[in-house]
Length: 164
Image: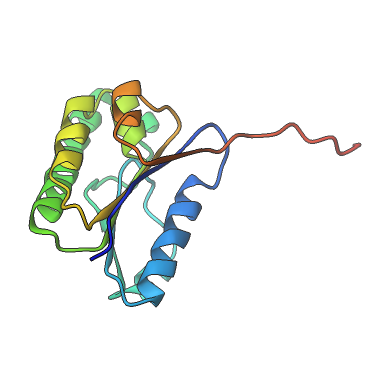
């Protein structure tokens, strides 16, 4: 039985979710099961990702089509409840070992926004069976969560030298 890992894609650059999805596609193409729980993501305008199912299963618990930053305080309070359902689902998936790879896309953003706590994310990771891998994404990486990682990839934006 293979040993699972905890990987983190973080930083100010773009492509963290794409890198995590690429890992998922690679694993699914080799017969693995992949779940991706998306936090703080605007509803997609196309159904392209659903075409990757059932090999990759996608979950979003937020109900609003708006960006979290654009919501009123009341709307944010409602979305926080939905996001809490997302981390609870992640904990259940890890406890039961339902998949080979669980991607918690933008979960670090939910921690940074104060929607989820570091303790909630750490508790979910501690439920992970040894053979299950987890990928977390987001801009800012708290030190306590970083200590749980086997691999951290920092993705940064580089200033272009292109002449205008």
